[in-house]
Length: 316
Image 1 (tube, rainbow, N blue to C red):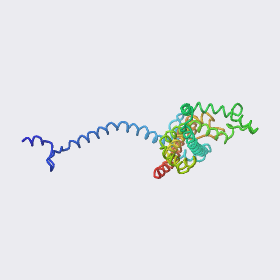
Image 2: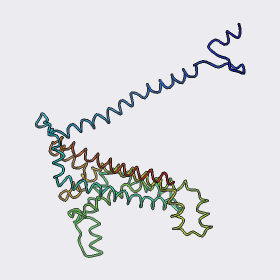
Image 3: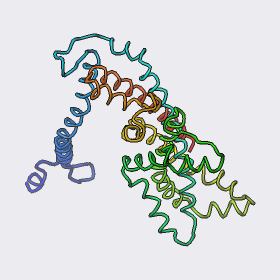
Image 4: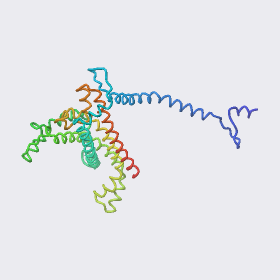
């Protein structure tokens, strides 16, 4: 009888040990259900805030919606055809890709140099590490205004230095390629300290024994960097390159503050075109179509970056 009472809700295995029936499974199921119920509101909200704007943008891209002249009329792919013949948009696509690729490459190279320098022992290293973060911590608008004055043809320090060295005056902000170079330089100056900090953290995780072994084998500083440092930092460099690539595709405040997209539309990027179409001309349908073009650029470049990341991940 005692065995029957003790065995209620349990079974006996071959060695006389009791086994609970379904209690563990039931408890695990309850925990899983509780986790799902807790996650559902957050996931639903995230899907709504991400999916609905995309669908609505796609719908607006097929219309000529202008809040000043409602209602919106369905025009099919009219906005996409207009984009194909719009010199400002086609130029913006080219400069957006150029701006992002050059900026990301320079930021990775200079960030690695800054991280390597800050990783070396020297007096005032702590102060230098703190000062390194100042450009990154500054708002982009402040950086853009400062560099706008420094590149100014009449008062700027950069045109003045070029004139003193070469005797030539180079109008940075009123020259197409000069203004493009100016915004890239400003963007690189602002973003490089962040990558320097990331590489500094990665370098501090490299075992010193590897460098000692390389020195024993007769490797010089460059050979140690190429054979030890670079392979170990390549996964982090690929990750940060992908992050900066996607992040900078949406650059707007730098262009708007520093050049206003000029001269002409030399420094216009897709994000600036979206702003101009939506709030300059109140053509929300056309702005939505440009948004889809920006999404396509982000998707393609992000996908290529992700493929590169996976190849590096397999290698290391």
